[in-house]
Amino acid sequence: MTDFQIPWGRIELPDSGFIIPLPGEQSVRLRRVRNELIITRISESGETESRFITGNEHSVFLEPGLPDLPVILKPSQYISILPSRKLDAFVEVPFTLRIFFGSKQKKIMLMEIVLKELSRSFFGNPENGEFAYFLESPLCCSIADYSAFESSVYCPLSIVNKSDQNLEFEKMIFRVPYLSIYKSSSGLIGSPVNITFHGQEQISQIVYRKTPPNTVEDSVFLAPPGAAEDKNLIRRSFYFFKNLYTG
Image 1: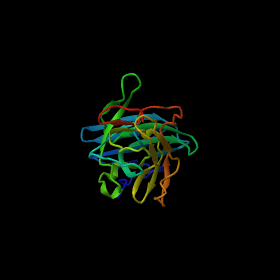
Image 2: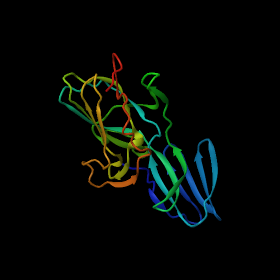
Image 3: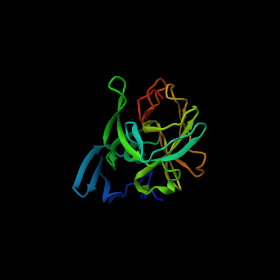
Image 4: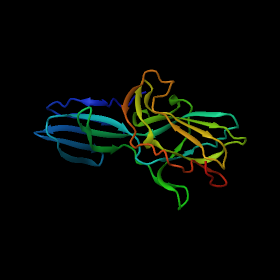
């Protein structure tokens, strides 16, 4: 498994510049010209160049990021979680490449490069719904069952059914901006999300962990969440096959 050999963290730019290979016949070239940083995105459609007047006092940093909106997660297969049972799975989410300039204590993001475009959608009803990206997932229990290792973050998701009925949902909302990202020998890993389902008429308990998964022993912290968790947020989590319930 590989993260496409992107050198995460602080990088040194040689005089000749630095090229970052990306999935899908893409790359990014970084080079200094006097007090400027020139970032060139290269793809099959050509080259796009951007200039940043940065000065020479600080460094360039590379970090992975997750989508800036929640993800509407649709299982690619029918899933039913029986009472008192738990689903442990990984969600394969495309990452973005974020380029920063500054110091380790204070960095400014210069550019965010989206490697895979996700379609936009809407979750909920017109009164209290929200915009999100759409992602269909097999919800595999092992990272090894996936294949897009070079362009994805694998986000651990646990759903516990504490109700007296089967949990059979068509879609759910997965708030990826709240997740940190770590690097391990298995690839890029997101911080875990634990959901406890208490029934279709009750609010589900959702916990966004601040540490890497316990099952990953060699993890190294790479990037903080893209957004702070809204503790006052009370919105629907699941969309069921028959009706939309608060949960």
